Length: 264
Image (tube, rainbow, N blue to C red; front, side):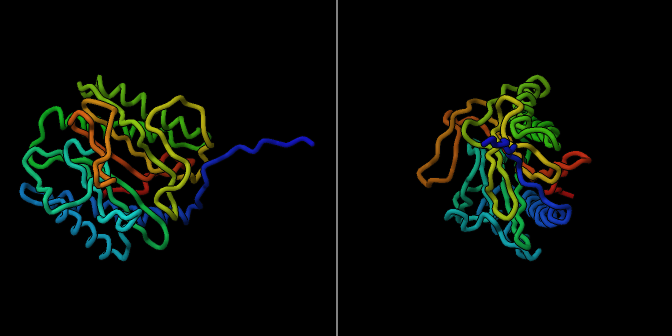
């Protein structure tokens, strides 16, 4: 008996479901902006966490991160050499020139939004600013591959090629963090498939009209190598170099990539 091979595809959301996801995503965008506005010399990352949680709850949503796998915060607050998953703490106090990455999620009516950005406290060094600008640029270049008919690793390849191009554009040597990447998202924060930030194009499940991925390049100035601290969450560069993290939840549509976590 003959069998027809079924092509795996990333699940497609309806237009109404995409609107519902964007409603959650807009709350994440407001929380990120509120956190950046509150970030200043002498402010702790625990205080920033409280700002994010209040913003999310005031909008009628739930902080997705809080309690996720035992994570204690409403945001991941990652400072300087911390790549991702930094636990907010009263002992982590911001200083002039710190490079801060904030990752945040909100759940509204059963749909999740997930987004991250990197910013400076006061004036950043030229290299730190270039790193953050380059990582943001890589995100926006990579998401251009999020179109119906492409495959998952077309996004991976676009992110990788954009990272190489960013080295020339921004005048810094960049390293793609090993072992971490983006993911499917919908009713749960982390859904299949896993999205690598580098790789060969043309592989993996098909991207459909309505498929959604959280796309999130994580880039450092010194190494792709990383380690998890004893708290089992905080991921740091092994050489102490700076890291940046930019992320949007993005839908593939016939009109092109649609950012579901806009920041107005």
